Image (tube, rainbow, N blue to C red; front, side, top):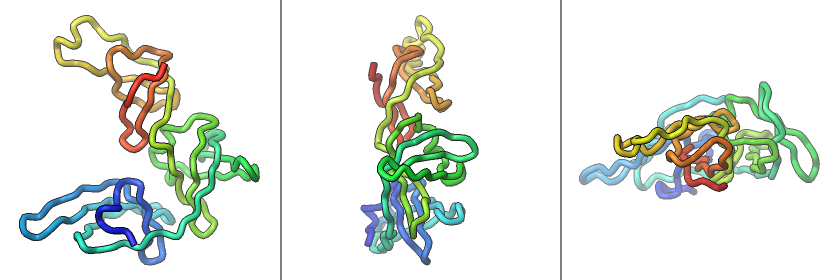
Length: 186
């Protein structure tokens, strides 16, 4: 059973026979009442999104899931992965992937989450390294005006705010949970 302190973005639980993934959380402390947790959850079977409120003493049922290590191959109408041991290929639709596809490059190792033998989601590593394909050069005096970041497009097409010293061709580490720049690698 999952308690209120176990639930965070990416947690998968089961309710009414269907697996749900938490896509947003907000912890609210009510004056004398106690804490509640507001959630936005996605049904991993039909893709529906709904809001849910959990009281401090409520518990959620853990989903019965299996995980399979796979390698990302390519994306077309769907995202295609291959099991490294059995060489089975798995395709996940863009509606299932959401914005997780922004962090996938060819060969990235991820875990496919399966429920009753059907692929329903993926688990990304906490941080990934991506190449900056385009960014504007930092202009002289930007820091004096309070601008310390600039937009940069990564090799996957994802746009992230980076510090002024990052140039085209640099490798940067990005947090897959928040989508934010962490550090320059190269």
